[in-house]
Length: 474
Image: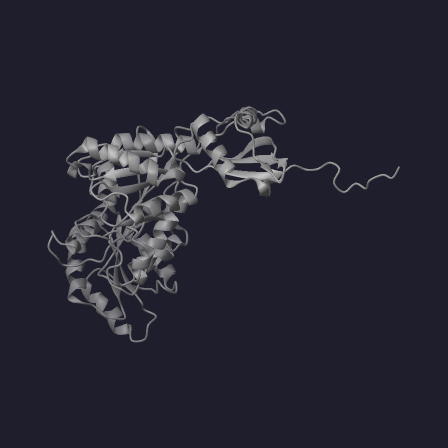
């Protein structure tokens, strides 16, 4: 990407709608309620032949630094300082307000190039607001409709004029050609290859939990800066925001999500949109960290979130946050271990780490647990090992007899990883009791060291070579 652009303006002028239009996806939450966006969100934008990084920001408001609105304004000012160009969006339909003039002066003092954008110009009666925008002294306003995509050509021309053609269209870098020799597999060897874990591959991690569990504070501590909006108020985060950083040379893409309450309590449309965005982050993540409040752990919602992550097939790690507020740490730790084993039998061996997002306690151990869990989630086991294990398991505990006929497990192979999934060829798979499936699952988890990740086992009836043949008469 060649340059960075920040979208700023007062609340409810259509900044997030324009952001979604430029990135080509509905990434940012959009609603008629003012002040939906709170954190700054980056995205890869495309405006005709232009490619750049776009940053959606919270609506600019005049407020004290200790208030939520004041902290939102600080995030927006940080985005302006980071950007090469600012799109100042005003509402042509509603006309200019004193806030627009105040923040126009703020942008003028910043010394950064500014493009004045008059949004909602397609509305009836918007001409007055459009011509009023000239009084801001920021150049000619560009009339657009972010909702309907009108005026994008004029916006592109204004951006190029403000940033300069050298920055807008940088010369492409020369890429040296490299020849990579790939190892060849012999026919039939694909199932017996145990792929090594790639320590350099970027890792996608989602942070979820109940409201006010400390998710944004945790990510800020990882980054070493106040990148995400935090505070004592519950439910500050609304959008799922992704941030990138490096841990021991490995790129980590971490998603901060909105706190998820019990479904019965989620009534407002905006909160429903936030929860849907959080669920989408879980599905696109590889490892999910469920943040518990160590002072009130194992609420019903906590258990439901862990179960949701496992049903989605993600690798899961528990983080008991606010450990700095716990007094008798040894007694509480023993109690948490006992409850984890008892209340989460479907995630036997799941890694749980006590942390403190405010102080940074336990964060390295948490990251190591994330890496170790992701390694297990990606594991591949050779067919030969699986069939030797299956044979020994049946000798130790044979499958039960159903209607006087004993079931037989013939063959086993791993059909996929992420999460580990296996296929077993057997007789009468529909008759295999659930208790024996649990026995096989627990055996796999223990013998192949697969703690805390979902394990899928599928059963398939073996083909009968004589099926369909007519019996010969003698």
